[in-house]
Length: 383
Length: 137
Ligand SMILES: [Zn+2]
Image (cartoon, rainbow over all chains, first blue to last red; front, side, top):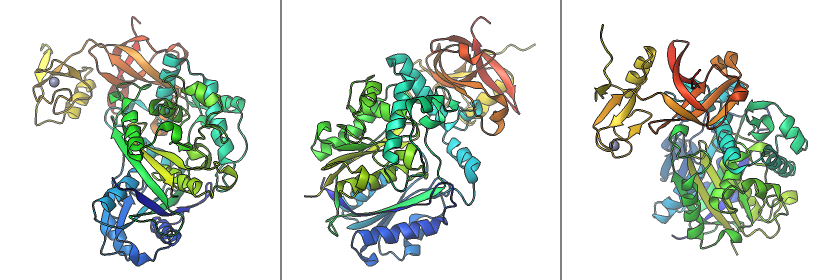
């Protein structure tokens, strides 16, 4: 597969608790900023991939959005709502370029919870991810899905609550270096453990934020445009189940390695070559499991790995350098695309106080519904 | 007096979920069993997810299960707010499949992975749910 490039990115910041702009305003701003960042004129765009939003999954189809933005003739596609790892839209854009359908594909994602739903409405909407017929009636919260994993991981591998807390402390420290973070104040292992229990054994500080909205834009190109392009070296994706009851285990997820190996093999690298990793972190147990399943440490050693400081900025494998959804924001479907933006910023060497020194290669993970469906992107600096 | 049959064919024209919940409403718990590969499945479907056979029947399982993992929900949302703290669990049925359920009538502190539980029913709102309680109690 030929490499393609992310030549432009954009990220619309809304801010903690602030009402988000209208959905189409977010999309329009994300589009204009990304195309400018790529050093292109709007008429150079000949493809559009829209990532569905959580609150407005059917607000517009990709043809309507292309028309709204004045793009065309163009390839137009959409990644539908639910169960998808969000990073998939970069893979779709790459496929379109490699298939000769387009040369400069605009990828857009926006979520807007504030104006229509409020926080409780957002929570209700996220809860719809559970199977309506056989899971919702028993009252799981979104964090319950991750709590069920954590309980089993603790049982099978002796992972400790202190280890689950230490990852929240690390990611918070990273988030506080991000000028756009929605949180303030350091955490300690003690403060994380003493926080309110949401769904045992997880406390509030071990689970993601809920933000009012945000947007991300990317220009995926056949040739680098501008002078800050980043190469898409590999993309892998693998779905293992959707309902929690259908997962073979809640502590071991073999399909994660399938997707990660696809991405790493396409890139022609090994895990040791990676300078940083951005993992979807709806709860601290999730990156911990991912680190094991991808193969950065032995199965069951994730707790010790994060506690060792390996995943801190300055460690051998910094994780979630922007703060992730635990300590930057969780805007909705675009959470993993915030991770893609961060990886591009790191590889451009523009991450400021949180810059990973000499970052050449990064791995980005996106998750659809509790590790059910996983996508991995390998991005690399263009030399 | 009619006796409940031990096995009924899956009606290809009926939504399996409708059958499942209607039967729960009269405190009857049915799992699908495959006539070809002899495996059980939950949740019910229009084909066997193990071998794609359409030769499915409904059977009454033992009602015995073991807690695979669980979480005590402390901050219920919507209609569940009044029930907190309540225990959401994945239990492995003796027949093989795993299902989500609530462990009821037990101090949440006593629930643990590996706990042996048995089927019961609980009315909640307009529906009767298959729940589990500690075996032998
Ligand atoms: Zn079968």
